Amino acid sequence: MKKLTVAVLSLLLLAACNTMEGVGKDVQKAGEKIEDAAEK
Image 1 (spheres, rainbow, N blue to C red):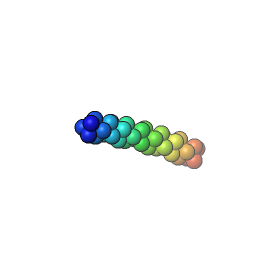
Image 2 (cartoon, helix red, strand yellow; image 1 turned 45 degrees about the horizontal axis):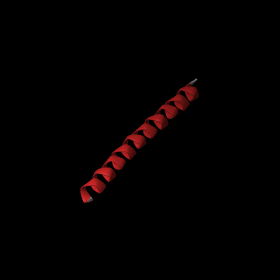
Image 3 (cartoon, helix red, strand yellow; image 1 turned 180 degrees about the vertical axis):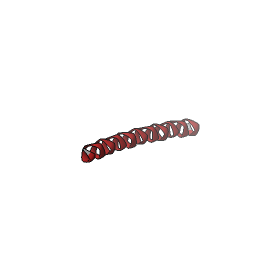
Image 4 (tube, helix red, strand yellow; image 1 turned 135 degrees about the vertical axis):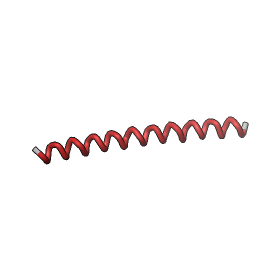
């Protein structure tokens, strides 16, 4: 039972890391578009 709980928590943490990475990429792309607009 304890091993199952650890496995599930590990999967949730990995999923959260991937989600945060995706959000970071989105924010970076948005920043680049704002920069491009400011340069024009």
